Length: 252
Image (cartoon, rainbow, N blue to C red; front, side, top):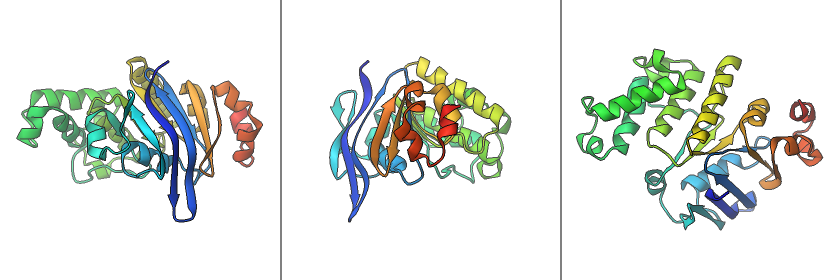
């Protein structure tokens, strides 16, 4: 299957520290691709390289076959790469709806020229539809900094979806979600993939990763130590060892 997003031999060094080392990764359209590993493995650094927040020391990033390594983060977003962050990045003083509406209006040309024009029906309709899709409609009028953490995570996802991404990068999106909410969120990821979006998921909830991902890549100390289907990753002793006692989790 042709990949929407390709990471080719990417390395990142900070002085003498190698944060990411010669990583290859592909995100096909219509699939959920997992990226897992212990804390400090280099997952967020790799996300930053893909989205243009960190220049690689070596290697290339391609979107639909085009080398985007030197593109700005803003250009990558315009061309269809969206992300959420491990650390919540909502606009706390705005309502939940307005958090999504800002992105929806930026995506629509007329909306951008009007600024925060709440009368823009297309942008407002998109925002409301996305809040419904992620299950956050009940909080639409609440201030974003006053909602539960799990809801704020869903707001971030809705805001990322508002730019109609080709590739969606999610960094710990289930943090703060209840087991029921996590199950619902997993179905949302599968639905997004079924619609043709390429999803790259960084997540510590191994059960969620194993249930929703088509293929999983495993980082440890910046190096790719495993890649395969969920069943292959579960059975990989090197991957199990990297989790320092997490073998029972992977095998469940």
